[in-house]
Image (tube, rainbow, N blue to C red; front, side, top):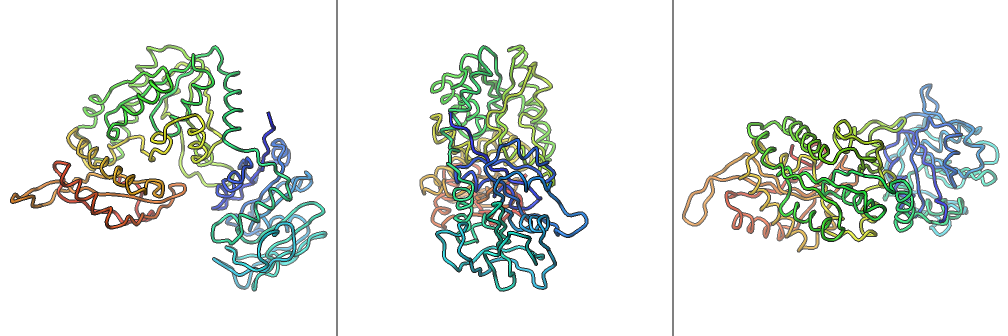
Length: 511
């Protein structure tokens, strides 16, 4: 099996650190994000074909500035410094960084010199800048290879040691030909072969899991979401005889969701799937609660209890499988990056399951890579492309107290919305779309009768990482169809509104 090529992305706390990692993978080269505190020895342990330094929020000359182990520059591996990464490179290797009289932010015109980094692109173009400091002078064996009106050294190169710097951000879409420059670094400078594909990943991972899990018993909490579904399919391909999946139906699922999960994993994949129907228990526990955080805690606690009950029937297992993916690992804190949110994919399950070891076969993958693996394994599109869905399910899309009646109303309305979005072929353009049943009732007229029924909200957003999101401009014609169908086909709804708020200031979900 061909050895995996790796590019190490050194994180200096920049907002685009994960995006750089993603861009490298999109070019079929595996990348891994490490903190700038990583030693040269640690970076070397990845046997990288290239190293990329990210941007960062600090000044390179500040006393508390993030530094890099200078031995990294002696590893003999090509290095590309981006923004702060260029500044720290210049400063470490005999150059000087100073505050700029005029900062550069946003799109800026740039002029390139002849250099392999810029092969195949126009001599002049526009790039995305975001800096208040700049490289005033460069060290021995470096040369200037690009400039802008206010930044004389917009790119630098040391071809002898294969160390390069870009003051701009090639990873963002606002930089014309930025991805071509990154491609040139990977394939011209680093001599990448481009062997990071999901087909290769599946082959490698299945072989690895077969050896690890053979003759062992593995337990997986299958939610029906993308990550746990792909995890189940991968484990089944590697070691079908030892896999047990437990699917907890808490009664807060979308319409037909339980049936779809059972059909795919029992009928198509022949997985040993245990369904625990606990919907009545969850509804009883949620009956008197309106506060969203209280609802979340009740659902999380009850889920563990139900799973524990099923786990006791199964007894001791060798492995507890989790659908952890790479953003879960990174968001839980890497080096100088801020902790975005803590992740524990099974919400405390290890304490209630008797197992020896956790196995996380998707830990190296981003979400879009997980989806590609799902298709490689033969999972149907309705599972692989499933919308992001919160753990508490519809409980946080029904505002106020939870009842079966309100859940059924929402299920039917949400189904119509998703059906019409798919018919309009917008389902692949919108990152997430769903309905919310408010606790607001208003007066309406249907036929000759006065009504006093619920208001339903439709929500659709586009996002990359869920940290920010823009509301999606669904054509009025489609919204009109959705509204008409919902008020005519779903009882107890007489008003439909569309949420046109971005994140921030709103959140994606309503609770």
